[in-house]
Image (cartoon, rainbow, N blue to C red; front, side, top):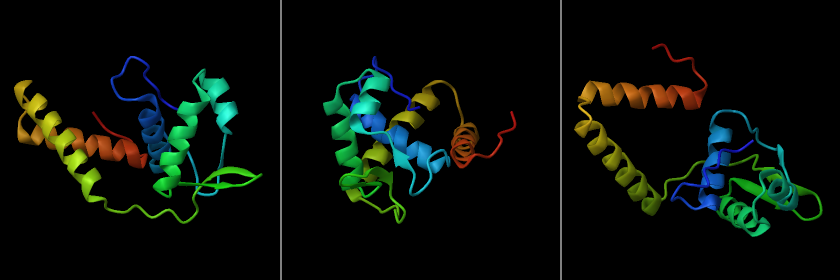
Length: 130
């Protein structure tokens, strides 16, 4: 259901947050759709329930999901992406690292832009031609 790499240096709860956001972007998760409970998801993914809870709390803080007491956790129907200056700085730093790596692999500007365009299309669910 969600992509988690236990060997990654990125904390599992952050991977789960990113995976849920990606699912929303790709249309795999729809506004108003119910998410598994913390216990269900922990059991399915063989993860500590505290890890799932931490991810859900972060998603709630970002207003990506809402929890209705006694009913469950849902993808927010009125989620509006917002610009967060600290997060923007993180994203820029990630882009910078990726661009530096691509440069040292021999990629030119047009190659890097093509890769970014392909990734955006993938997230939007558009078929990518090779």
